[in-house]
Length: 382
Length: 48
Image (tube, rainbow over all chains, first blue to last red; front, side, top):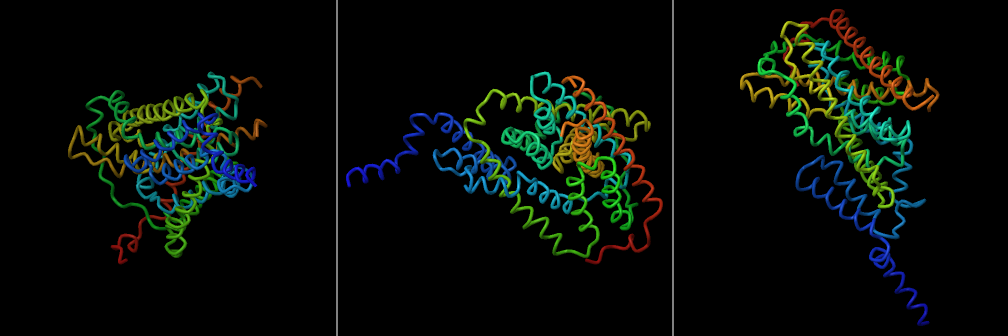
């Protein structure tokens, strides 16, 4: 009887005993979870993601809870929507539903800024390989440069699931830091004269038919060129088509709100669940954070440099600062461009042009991932 | 295939493929605008 009582009490204290005797990694990760929750709640850093990620991290690092074991809550969520890429794709439907491609269609050539804003992905790929990461790990890390959380999660969950936690946290953290990372680069790469270039004010020139057909055409073109990325582009464009059709208001609202919110909650919790101490506390996590920073910085560099090229080729009709918005990170990057532009000319309104480049960046980031996956398939790597 | 051949191939084809696709899309968007110009209905203020 006494043995049974002692064994029962042992069951009640085993978690705390583990934590204080051999669970230093769990203890550190509980602190990391605290930092994520603090950043999300107090500093407003991507709270929709960092709060569930932080709480998932918190849950999984309380010892012996078995939440990531077969049948555990977080493992079930992981299998439901990350192992099969469902959650990021559901979020993409919502992103497409919220995106207005109107400013981009007003001036389609700024789509190219969305391509330039992805070059950092490929620079980071080479750096990750130089640091000794395996090929598919390097690809997954480089995708942080897409500045697009669901894209990074989609690729990492397929090809480097063991790195999903650090890649996701790095992707969302740096996206939130765009207002800090971008301005010094924008200033360093442009002249005072370039920063005050005023762009012609946008007049409405795009018909509703064009807006309606655009998502269909994008899906066909990108699906034919990079079929491995069709789930990504197809879901974004489905959301956008519903938006522009104007006939499925209920589905549109559900995609923007309920579906995206539920998917975001489950996605965040499941990603937090991958952040167990023994898997997260490695030197490579620091390397991933460093490479993520380089990826987003290089995206900005190439975006602004391409903006300068377009400025030159158009005889000064394009303000190179809008090139920075080509990195994706929608819509924050466009707002940063507007703020920076007005620092040098208070009457310069770049927002709509930057929003065009920014939505171009969204298409560009998904396309870069799609092209990468299709090239990997062509090379027989996946 | 060694690591550097892999990296450089993916970089060249990846950057080229992304620029090429977005260039095609910009041409298609321009074509759509020409084929379906703004109509009087589009110009009317939104009633909703």
